[in-house]
Image 1 (cartoon, rainbow, N blue to C red):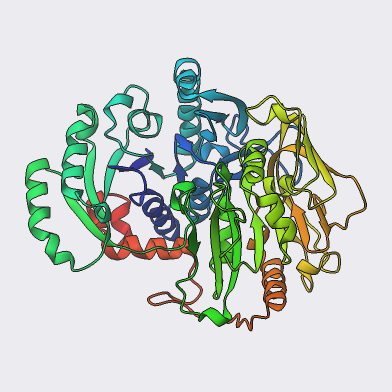
Image 2: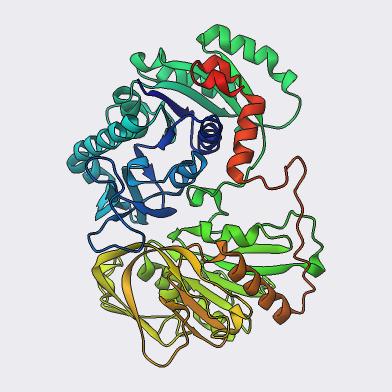
Amino acid sequence: MTRTLLVAGTASHVGKSTVAAGLCRLLADRGIDVAPFKGQNMSNNARVVVRPDADGQQSIEAGDDSNGQWGEIGVSQFVQARAARTTPTTDCNPVLLKPRGDGESQLVVQGEAHEHVPAGTYYDEYWERAREAAEESYRRLAADNDVIVAEGAGSIGEINLHDRDLANVETARFADADILLLVDIERGGAFASLYGTIELVPDALRERIVGALITKFRGDPSLLEPGIEEIESKTGVPILGVLPYDDPGLPEEDSVGLPGSEERGVVGDDDGVPAERRIRIAVPRLPRISNATDLEALAAEPGVSVVYVPVDGDTADPLEGVDADAVVLPGTKNTVDDLLALHDAGFADALAAFEGPIVGVCGGYQLLGERITNAALEGTGEADVVEGLGLLPVETRFEGDKRLEQTTVPVDGDASPLLEGATGPASGYEIHAGRTRALEDVSRPLGDSSAARGRVLGTYLHGLFDNASVRTAFLDTIAASAGVDRDATDSPGAGEEPGETPADRAARLVRDHVELAALGEPFERLE
C-alpha cells in the first residue's frame, strides 16, 4: 500500500515546499519510488509539463503539442518532482488557480486552462469537479509509487474552509495520509499557533498528526526545550525537529516571497561582492507579476542585484535613484492591466530614455511592443486596443487559446548585442495567451518566439536565464555597458557542498534536523 505523508502548515510560508522537496530527494536517493502531490495550488509561478493519459503513461513526445498534451502546474511541484528524480506531470498538481486581480483566478484542472472565475463561483460551480480531478490524479500517482509526499496549502486550521479545503483536509481524507505539521517560529507565537491549529483541525484529522516541525529558527535550539516539553504535553504531538533558518535556493512558489508591490526591494545583494563590482538589474514590480522565478538565476549570480521597482506612480521617473544597469520586464498574468499601470507610473518615458539593455520575457515581451489588440479578452477593461511601451516594432493580439510547450530554441549571439558570445540552444518553456508579430524587420536571436532591435530584446522563452551561455553573455554585456569589472568566479557558500543542488540542500536540511525514524516506514530508512 502506498504511504502518503501530508506536509501541512499552521500558515503560508512556513517551509512546506522545502521540507517536501527534501523528503522527495532523500527517498529517491534510497531507491524508493516517490512522487510529490498538491491537490490545489494558487500560484502564478507555473511550469509546463506533460499530461498523462488515462493509464498514467506519458503520452507525448517533446515538442509535440498537436493534441494539447502539455499542461501547467505550480513551480513547487515541478521542483519536487525533479527532487524525486521523476518526470513531473499534471497529476502532481491537478488543480491550479492563477490570480489575475479583481478577485478572479484562472482555473487550471489537470493542466488544462479554463475560464477566470471569482472565488465564490469556483466553490459553488467547480469545486466538486476539482476534487474529483485531484483524487483521480492522486490515484494514478499512488498506483506507480511507494510514497506520495503531499504538500498542503496555507493553514490546515482554516475552519471556514474545512468543508472545501482540497489541498489539506480533502487530500488527507482521500489519501488516508499521515500529517506532518510545520510552524514558522520566525513570525513569533509559534507555540500558540501550533496549539491552536491542532485544536482547530477536524477531529478525524487530528489523530493523523504524527509529528510537528519548528522551522526558521535562529539561535540556540536548547532555548526551546521547555516550550517543546509543554506543547507536547498539551497536544500529545511530538516535536520531531527544529530546522534552522536556511534558504536552500528553491524557487519561490508565489509573489509573496517578493518585495511588496509598493516598495523597492533588492534581491541578491548579500553575497559579499563590493558595490564597485556589482551590476544592478531593475525589474518593474508588476501588480500581476507571474513566473518571477525567471529572475532567480540572475539574482543567484555573484555580483548581481535584482532591484524590484514599484509601479505606483509616486515619482515622475520610476527608475530615478535605482542606478540600474539593465531592465528586465517579467511575465504577467494580465498583460493589458499591467501595461496600463506602467503607463500611469511613467515607465514608458523612463524606459525610452534608459540607455542600457532591456529584456522582456513572455508578458514582458508583449509589453515592449507597439500595441496590444483584442485587449478586452485579456484585461478587465473594455478597450480593444492598448498602446504598448513602443520599444519593439511588434504587435500582440489576444485570442481565446493558450500556448503551452516545453521547447528548445536556437541561440544566435550575433543577432543581438545583448547576447553577444552566447552559443548553443536554449531550453525552457512557453506559457502564454496572445500571438506576437513583427511590424518591421527585427532580428531573431532566440528563434521565431523572439524579436530584438538594438538594446531591446523580447522573448516568450521562460527559463531563458537558466541557460548558462545566455545568462553569462547577458551579464557580461551589462557589465561592459556599465563599465563594471565583473568577476564571475563562484565558490560554495558557508556550509554548502560543492556541486549541491537546491534539492540536495533541502534534503540535507531535513536529514540533519528531523527525527525521520519517528515517521515510520520507509522514512526510518533515511537516517
